[in-house]
Amino acid sequence: MRTIEQYLPEHPFFAGLDTGALAIVCGCATNVSFAPGEFLFRQGQPANQFFVIRRGRVALQIHGPAVGTMVVDTADAGDVVGWSWLVPPYHWLFDARAVEPTGAVSFDGECLRGKCEEDPRLGYQLMKSVSQVMLSRLTAARVRLLDVYGKANSVSPLLSPLLAEAEATWARPRQAGATHPGATNAGATNAEPG
Amino acid sequence: MPSLAERQGTQPVGALVPRLFRVANRRQDTADTFTMMLEPLDGVALDFVPGQFTMLAAFGVGQVPISVSSDAMVDGPLCHTIRDVGPVTHALSRTSVGDVVGVRGPYGTGWDVAGGENLDVVLVAGGIGLAPLRPAMLEVLHHRQRYGRVVLLYGTRSPEDVLFADELKRWENLGVEVLITVDYGTPAWDGRVGLVTTLIKRAGFDPHSSLALVCGPEVMMRFTATALIERGVRPERVRVSLERNMRCGVGLCGHCQYRELFICLDGPVLPYARVADLLGTREL
Image (cartoon, chains in turn brown, green):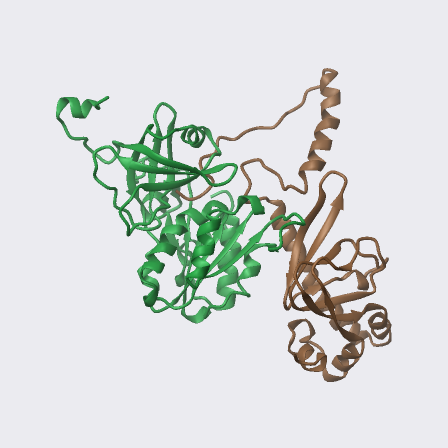
């Protein structure tokens, strides 16, 4: 397996960094491994790291009283996991769980934050790279909210408990005589090309 | 009961007259998707090319355009894999073995799989879009030596919605690279979660010598085609299968008109380069 110093310069996430900046980043990095079921981090805990996955798979999951535990994304080899280390209040918003035997490079977020404060150029480069990851994940989340594989008028499973709650809230005044638009059911043919 | 044409000894005239097919078998694929296997009452098989569709009639309810999902190169029942989403598909979902349905067609253009000979073939399916791609995959596998690497990228809503699960494993065993992702997973799902477009960078194909066949919801096809082209696939080698509200299937009624195109005649399979600007046009 290549060393961290060999691996990171080839990774697109670090493409904008010069040799000196790369050396700083490598100084904050260590190789880590996780067994299936082991957590890289847990929702609500302090976010002091991020990871570049070298092998295996990590599931990003979220909990809610209505939805239980739902896997909202996975990260495979080459993917970057975690941006909460860079944005106050530095707490994880999701769980990250190894699905397979997983190897990763772990970066000390506190160490890197300090280096970024000292060297704004490094900070700007890293912020640009993290922004790319955030943008792609945000875009993916927005597209999935369209629920393109669902039936007409269906909603994302993540939204349905919230809508059910809203529906219940709406239903109360309706029972008292208020009007309620209700759900339409557009006549759809088979959703796919025919 | 014999049809009026049979009783009077006349032949059906015109492309709008449905032929009668008996439901020979039926399979429930997922909670809302099923496959009907049909046999012609007159014993004459319906020849089609992968990618074409038929107008399936539930008598007394209506007709819907459904792509054929069976193997075009093997004699056997005519298969349609259908999602129960509206009155006609619901009526079809309630049919039993022995019931009779109407079939018109086949209509429209096919995938032209042979156009990918000597190339890598990348099939990208979204949701039930896997069904119209199945005959294309089977054609490639019948002539495996004529093609390079074969890749199937499949995105669907949840693990429970994965179609043809056994067949996907069989294709994998035949050397097809099969990558699956779902929009939402439970902790028990150990596969990928995310958009089907994320699979494009992971798949092992040479984008500069690949044919890509894409079928799924329009939004998915637009993002997928863009990602394929970004990776290096030539736009004229990306084919998509469009869906519009079809009625006659033969270009007469205009229901499926898409600016200058009649999807029932010019499509459903079209080069992405020809429709890219249409797909980006609002309310068209």
